[in-house]
Amino acid sequence: MIDVINFINQNQETVLILTGIVLLVFFIWNIYLSYNLSKIKKRTRSFFANSEAKDLEEIIYKQIKKTNETDSAIKKIIADNKKIKNNLSGCVQKVGVVRFNPFGDVGGNQSFVIALLDNSLSGVIIQSLYSRDGVRVYSKEIKEGKSEYALGKEEEEAIGIAKEK
Image (cartoon, rainbow, N blue to C red):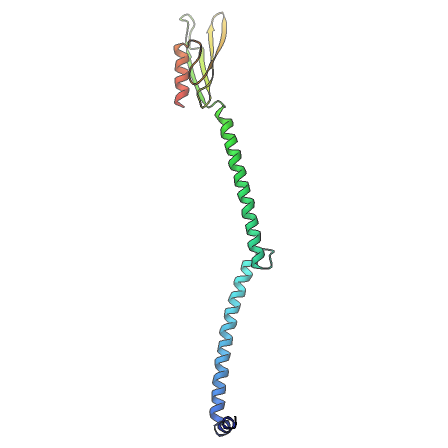
């Protein structure tokens, strides 16, 4: 210990210069660390700016909760979509209309056949026959594109038109 004190007393200028250099290095290091700390604080502020959370753990917990809620909502939408698809399969999706003139003495194509079918080609055919004496309306049930009753060429044509759609 006495040797160190003797060295310092004999080389005071050198010790002062070395002390100044060490202080300068520490000062520059302090400026560098302060700069990096301010950058980290700025990033942290922007990260927490849109949140009421006070720390990262709380933000992650809230995000997991939102993700679980979103997953539940998506599952509900998928289930609802399946129900809608099932309901739609029984709705009228295919329509075929044919106008015709069944009697030569009546002008124009006033009579018609309309086929109203679902996705499995089941539904109804409605036929309207127009004559001078009046209008007659008939219907036939259709199951999978066929009827238990005989179909006329216009009815077959209406089913064919509906199948194409």
